[in-house]
Image 1 (spheres, helix red, strand yellow):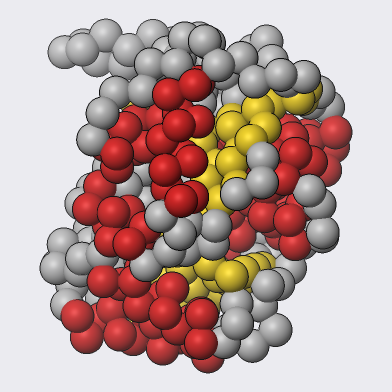
Image 2 (cartoon, helix red, strand yellow):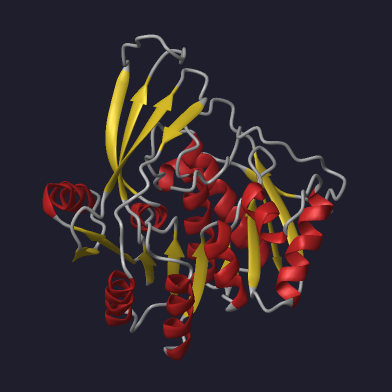
Length: 326
């Protein structure tokens, strides 16, 4: 079982438009609402692919009721901690060519006491878990100590921890040596304080993090797939998406695919391939929909025979694009 914590969840409203023209009136050509937040997306993807997961998040009131109904419809087991106004509304505008524009609310003003309640609920669910996953941005008033506490509590129970966040929160978590981090390229550059223009630069940065005590680093690289690094090896995998529809949540699905494989005993290489397939399958779906087994099966991912260290990386999210930190 994989337990996810999403401290800053959102109802994700996706609106499809032909082409976005700033300052003009648009007529929507489609739309949907999904329960969102990075950890929630991981649990949704795992559940859709018949893996056991529990999503833990704060929320109360009408938004929490709607959120719970959507998770029930997706058959995602969940605990919603009663904290008023904790569920944001995020808006995603998707154009015909797949270009995605996001407007994310910041989240409720929260306290250290709120963080403690979240950690207590995770600990109540931790027995029998293979992984605990802390995902996403933090609401105002809560700092990276939340993810540090998550790592420390999971470690006391002998449970592995994955962290997918950004900024100072990611730096705080890394200092506590989690078993896995999953940044995208921009988040990794911010973490190490330098630009990483080639795959070789990314590899070197990941290896420094491994040397500092992080168990494994998986970096999503947009159209260039993903690289996975641990103390023994480094692997790179890629998949091609001919008609991308939305990159929202693709990085979360990549993480879910990676964890599902690792939980089943897969090697680093097989887990990275699994993650890239799940992430690429998500890009082929509208909004923040998560792929199921048939979607994943339709994707062909390949492992590089040798790491293309001189590969120039770009910001073009044509495959498993930025994780759209929310």
